[in-house]
Image (cartoon, rainbow, N blue to C red; front, side):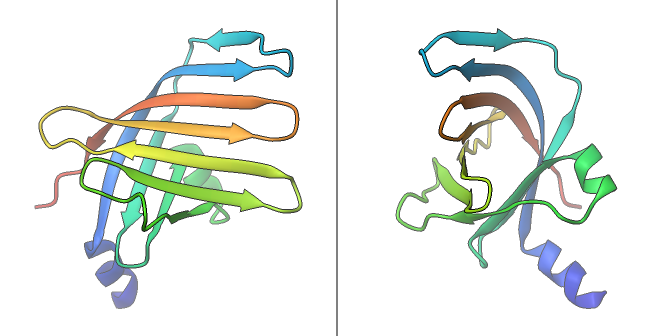
Length: 130
């Protein structure tokens, strides 16, 4: 228990709401979706070079959430790029996170397989630590 709380002390946490979702079909036809209710939690562990991004509903329902690997090459103060690939599902998930100290941070999640690509846009607010 102490180890978990120590690990969380080195993590940055953000809460995100979805602002747009786009589906790109094989014929490049684009469909947009606009109704979003879920709140997402983004936890960045810079020392471990990992991040977790999932809805609060998923986090409460299961402990089996996707852990993304942060690319050290593209990491900077302005952008964090992370990727999660599953061989069994042939799905590629990417996170582009743009942290900001003065306004809401932006996050883009891209989920693609051999047929479709989903692009989701989020606004994120950093959790204040006291």
